[in-house]
Length: 277
Image 1 (tube, rainbow, N blue to C red):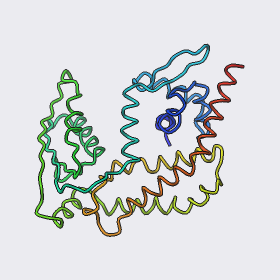
Image 2 (cartoon, rainbow, N blue to C red):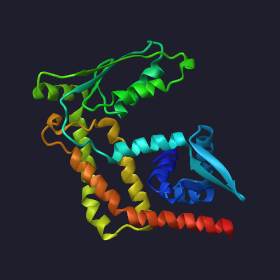
Image 3 (cartoon, rainbow, N blue to C red):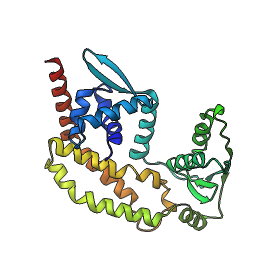
Image 4 (cartoon, rainbow, N blue to C red):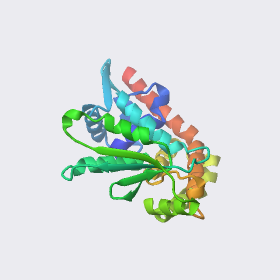
């Protein structure tokens, strides 16, 4: 787990519920549970502030860090993708995005592809992406937020479409996403965490062990929303493990919550007392 990601995860899963701020000494204590050295924490915090992800303020002799509004927006968006699942029946429509980016601007093309994947679109052809979810407005908003002064041009065409039926829909989904590889990854996740649920429930882990285990769980699961488009049931292959993996993730995350939060509160409180003293 990288130090930079740990800072965001600590804010997203813990610090947001205790005022959304943390003193540097408290952040150092929390990161120490994961073997991150104090010097590394200071460097990461300084860089995140310089990049516009953190604010800082002085509280006496101590520096306190808070996430910026943009950081909170991205954190909330990511949390929704990790914890929520699409509900309700599918309307049978595909949303299609066709884009054109200057050949020389590979960086912009890569950014666009990553954003489309994050929003649940799959690549059907080199510049053609599809999704069963109605997220075209989000795609257009992301492009609208780009600074025209950068001179980076994207031509974007969006469509609603239907196939000839369920079999064609399933074949299209299989082309746009590598569902077999994704299902194998879900099987590995289940093999790793499902056997641990009884221990989590029994409180076998406490203190820093519970905190580290819970953060590792989040780290292991967080990349799935980039790969899993959360397809409607009628588009999924037989033996799909995605929903079961999501349920195991939620159960494990919940079972470890009390012990992990207690350790966070203890470390923040101890760091605060040290400053006051």
